[in-house]
Image 1 (cartoon, one colour):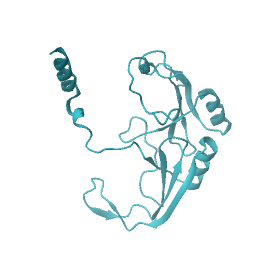
Image 2: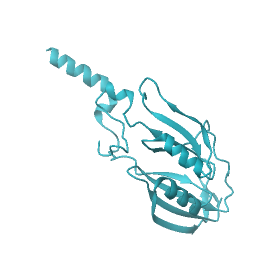
Image 3: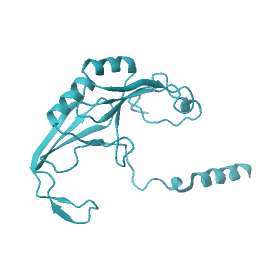
Image 4: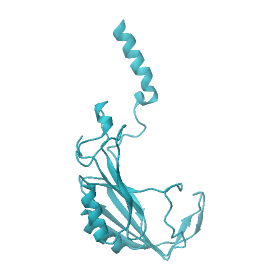
Length: 195
C-alpha cells in the first residue's frame, strides 16, 4: 500500500508533464540571428569559434512583409534577404539573416528589451577566450563572474559585443555546476552532447 501511495503522489507531482510533451523533439536545431553583413558575421564566427557555413541561399527579393501583429500583408520592409546556416562545434546551428536596405530597426536590442537574446559559446578556459576576444579588438563587458554557490556554482561567464554590436557570452564550467550534486537530470552541454 505504501508503494502505491508513493507512486500516486509521484504521478500527481508531475502534473501535466506526465502526459508528455505536445511535440516530441530531439532538441534545438538552430538559433536565428539577423546581422547587418553576412560575410562579416561568418568570418567573425569562423575565426573566433570555428563555426563553418554549410548552406547559403538568396538573396531573395522580398515582395511583401507581415504586419507587426502578423495578421495581414504590408509593403516589404527590405529589398532582399540572404541566409546562411552555420555549424558551431557540438551545439545548435546558427542561422544568419542579412536583410538588404531594410527599413527595420538597426538598433541592437538592450538586454532588458522583449525579444532580446544572446548566444553563449562554451569554453573550458574563459580567461583565454577573453584574451582572444580582446586581441580582435572586441569589447568585453566587465570581468568574468564565477558563481560561488547555488545551482550554477562553478560556472564562469562574461558577456562581450560582436563586431556588429550584438551581445554574446563566453561560458565555462569544466568541473560541472552545483545543481549536478542534487539531481541525476542534466542540462544539455556541448562538453557532453550525447547526455
